[in-house]
Amino acid sequence: MRRLMIISLFIIACQKTDEKRPFVINGAGSTFIYPLISKWSYSFYNETKNQVNYQSIGSGGGIKQVSERVIDFGASDKPLEREKLDSAKLFQFPVIVGGISIVYNIPNLNEKLYLTGEIICNIYLGKIKKWNDERIKKLNPKINLPDLKITPVRRSDGSGTTFIFTNYLSKVCPEWKDKVGYGTSVNWPEGIGAKGNEGVANYVKQNFGTIGYVEYAYAIENNLNYAYLDNKKGNFILPSFRTFQEATKYAKWDSNNDFFEILTYQDGDSTYPITGAVFILIPREKKEKNKQIIEFFKWSFEKGDSIAISLNYVPLSKETKEKVMNYWNEIIK
Image (cartoon, rainbow, N blue to C red; front, side, top):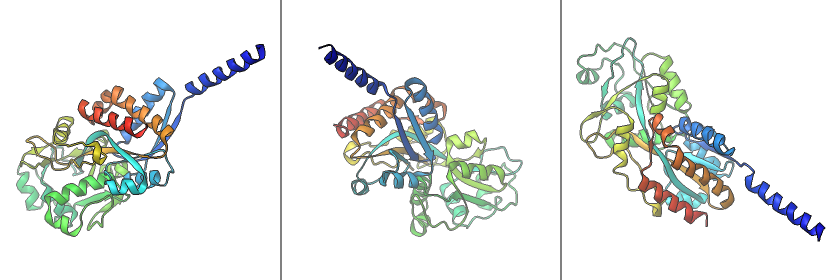
């Protein structure tokens, strides 16, 4: 009897130890979300001792690695259609919204430029080659623009940021749509390639005459100038928490299509035109590991909003979070 009691106590003790054992999850993908997910994971670890490792390799890499089951979850700024999710046997849900700023480096210029989608399109098509081009000067009559070559900088890796940017260009510039299109990688007519948001930001920061596109947190972190852009209503808007938030008002999040939604060039007087969401991709068959992943993102929904806002990301609305959490409940049954 005594021996049986000791064995029983040992089993109970082991069960309790297992319950308390911290977990480790590994993710990779979007550089867009990296500044945020690194802070989320740091705070999550301090509170729970559960570890989230995340590699900023670009959305294309994240999609590839989670599809091949190299990692536990992928992060992508490009939402996947149901056909691709079914093929790779993945679930998908959004976690945060942010925006892409158009950054530039013009010597001795501290003012913010006004640019249109058409001008940006023509720069990346190689049709506008100098900063003192008449089309740019007309929008910025009070700025003394130099006779300086424009060097467009773009991503060299598979990138959700590129997906959002080129999707925007396809909506505002018919020639871009016809000749280039949109995706995580495209055949760029012009430009210097750099890896990751950090690579584009660093290249622009270090080289006069450059223009590039980066997630807003990278523009702020690197103290880069960024432009006003014209939106669908014809108003010139700066990237900001508030103007990204405006774009989310027009999102139609639906769990029945795995929350597929593209937020570029939305309606609204003060909507910033290059806004996008980050989506998490998880394997359908790994229910126990998915519970751990969901625990992390549930924590981020409940306790991570202040961190997100401090970096100018927009948390999902209460209603959208509830839709996502209901989706979680369904997929981990």
